[in-house]
Image 1 (cartoon, rainbow, N blue to C red):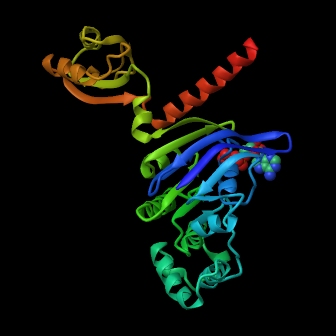
Image 2: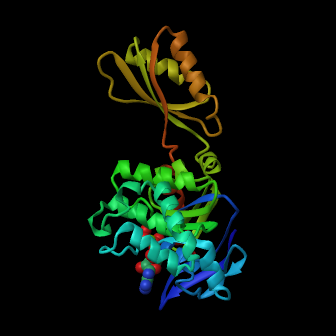
Length: 324
Ligand SMILES: Nc1ncnc2c1ncn2[C@@H]1O[C@H](COP(=O)(O)OP(=O)(O)OP(=O)(O)O)[C@@H](O)[C@H]1O
Ligand SMILES: [Mg+2]
């Protein structure tokens, strides 16, 4: 549904996006993840025909962004980083204005406004002035205008940025509810958002794609060893530590703050031995007659994987520039 091939976008001497390629299949919801300045908005603006590519190609629903921009725009709903809402207009007035801009048949507009207001939970504020709405509601108006012409593709630039956690959840649920009928790219630097909403992730760093994979595979690509945090009740610190050091596959055990009869430790597995680490530790504790009060993996979050990947990439770049 979306195809990008060798796309480069340059602003004067600054290359914002360097030779990136990716595809998004019909019905997929893809998280476009990257730090500030990574090139997310630039890529989205090329896909929505607001910026021409410097080199390479991009197409949406089979239409080329340079050659068939009208067809591309017809197939896309776009929520820009700053939603283009007119503060002096009422919600329904604004949506009518957008619907007309998008050349919707005038007989269909009123019904469609009702539908999108229902979808975006805007029913209560339909006749309120946009400038008087909270940021969360304004963001929903931004999403409502993006879906008004029922486009197959949605491009949402940081849909939850600046919202409080509850509003973020509402917007996330709204996006999730749209995912069945639409192909969606959403950009974010909130990793939990990608985990919550997206099937696939594209990680962009300094204008280059450094990973493009399913969320599940990214987790699997994590480290070959595992570190777990463990808390044991009923044993003394020295015996617990000794017992855990004897567990197969354990590389090392580090004591943490132990208090009130709880022994807290961090256990690191040997490389390639992570699968059985937690069950083996649990068994060792229980068989010694102690109670296991906590056992959790540390550092396996998407956040850690993202930081590892971006750091590894920067280190690689530095290495290359030293050897050149
Ligand atoms: N209009 C512009 N003129 C010149 N440089 C620009 C322009 N817009 C963006 N850039 C530069 O291009 C690079 C990519 O910016 P972009 O806005 O695409 O990043 P982003 O990933 O969306 O970041 P953020 O998370 O902060 O929104 C940055 O180095 C930025 O300074
Ligand atoms: Mg941006």
